[in-house]
Image (tube, rainbow, N blue to C red; front, side, top):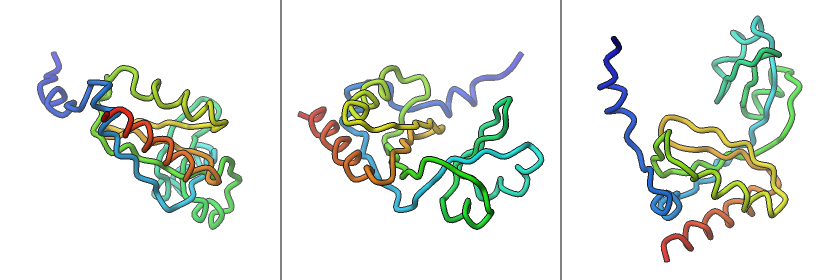
Length: 145
């Protein structure tokens, strides 16, 4: 039998949607990121540069800075900026990203969300990053009212 007490202690985080919205504290990263794919054999050369690694049956997806992708000669797509929602959201929180993504979609923005252990991260088109940040700050401000 597995002892989940350590995992349960670590899995704390906000679950209340109103609180998540009010306290999201979006922060825009200054760097431009891109998505690239490499074979499993190429991964060892790139893993230290990658912000995220995700294995799929077709290949390995990387999120890395555009600078690192270019320096490595990797073909890449979707120049984007990362917005970190700095509230510590629980991994099992319900509706947080579902409340945010449609608002950005309504403004014509594709968003690639990634959930980390502590925070949610939104990768938005680089040329729309400031717009996305303003929208998120507005959503958060409205939630506080």
